[in-house]
Image (tube, rainbow, N blue to C red; front, side, top):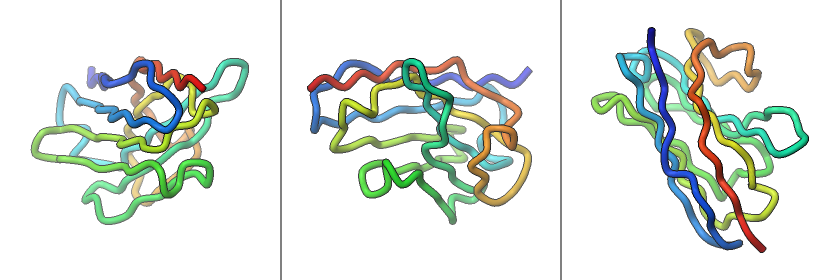
Length: 124
């Protein structure tokens, strides 16, 4: 069973930065689209960012565009999310996900492997 494990979450002040990392137990990262999603308290899980298998194309939610950067290292089987200029509304559990399809899907239903999540809390 392929597993994804997120790390790098924590507590940060408004305006600060965090870097999340997602490590795959097998070759999942190198074989397909990878995405980051988040779930804030009392809200539905939402799309954050996505990157294609070769890293050539990325897409971001409007709320994070210009502040977050998704990247991947297929040799290391990792996908990272660099988060800058963090805001209290970025507070959520962040999940990485792997999908078998190409492109840059924003729907969670395009992903079939999920990590357990990592908490990000931004204080004002």
